[in-house]
Image (cartoon, rainbow, N blue to C red; front, top):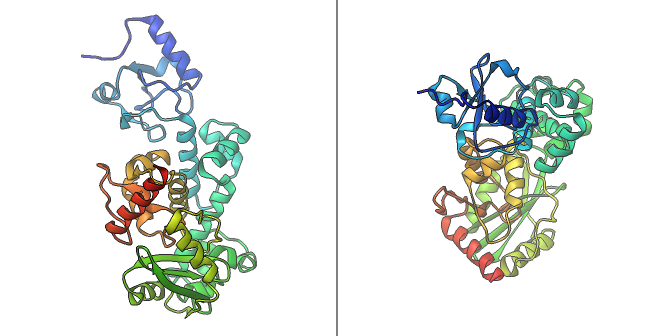
Length: 355
């Protein structure tokens, strides 16, 4: 049976107006015969010719008719997708897959928005501009190339940098150290750390000259220091409780009474995707939780729940980036780097302060 709505011209006309106006609706999907793809109204893809469009009540009906779901608006995930979110997700994908980040005008054309509208929407949803996001993608490619042993020159050009001198000028911001030092596991970098007792066990805070690079919780000092040294095997790592005393005081105050801790400067190397996940985590109110799937959907990629989980597991600055507020699909407290018992305790403390 063909589930397309073809017997009622007035209904089709109303639906076509929603497609033309890019207005989201959960009542139907539309399929394009020339591409074999079906979308939600509100999708940022190019508007098709009316003669090539068929309407269906559900995505399942469209798939039964031989159409596949659009990768931009993801009409098969059972949720109404904000078209702005779909456009931003597509812009992120284009930036991440291009050899060099596309200019704003090219991103706007590909997503169906004006450059001004895309810039404003991207900034609001991601927290940084498309250009800053592109810079983060290039910086991660540089870090990946250096870690893979491509050599400084090969890593620089492979990441899309045309001028090595510019990278060295900005090496502190990009890597926290020079490219050669980063490639050597932190050789030449100075990292100081402090250890103290906290309500959830021992606490380690470590920082470079640029900012905080680790906040960790465990039962013994040896495990904490070993993890720090494992991340930077060639760095000069030394304990300096006096220098890190203000940071330790802020961490303990947060654990004791929920005092803000997010104002501390960070020196954390991460992929652009990890930063997006961490920004989403920081937006969760204290005491509340979101599933990994919810976070993935909020980032415009409902199929990235596992990648979100990995971004949480690799968060080196616990508490500052509150990954304890991410939970499994059934609400279970799984996957916390510092132990499920601490995750449960952190949430209980936050909820107790709100009650």
